[in-house]
Length: 255
Image (cartoon, rainbow, N blue to C red; front, side):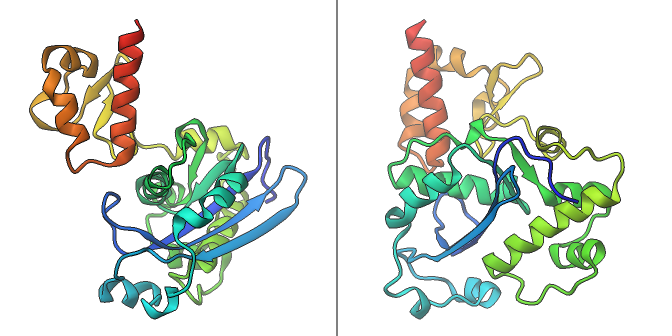
């Protein structure tokens, strides 16, 4: 089924040095952009992560340290990626939990102020798990009746994810062809930051989701424990978490 789009949508996938969004880096990014008029275009970059790629990661995506020698760093391609993603909704496979948080970290490290949280996210894995509960290769076989040759290559995984979403819309009559609905349908958290360190409570207030102040309003703690803000900013937290906390502090200060 052809996607019903109000905005362009970018399907993307990352291959990385590992699964820690704070310390690991991107080694490949691929994306496929679909416009409301039906135009489609693809890009893929091998990235020099500026750190060794662990053998266990290479065993999965087959990208070696030798393969990225001479490749651009993420900072060198960040402007092009930002331009391509600008004004677009975003889709991926397990993207809400991993790819989007890690992409946000890399963009912040590159000095970008792009706010991905303003976009609509469609996580195709969530649809699959709600409906069938399998893996990406199984999803591709189930929905598209094809074998996923070259899995864990970002370009292959990106195109497979795009095809799966189209097939899901064809298969499930109760699944509207509407990106805003699909974004809400595939959002499983009430996170304020991508890492889930700060969440919304039932009243829509920002509260801490970890540590000694878990469940308490962020604005209250910033007033009663003035050192907690500095502890987080100097701690091993994601850049996006620090950015969100800083924005809350500045917003409260302006009041």
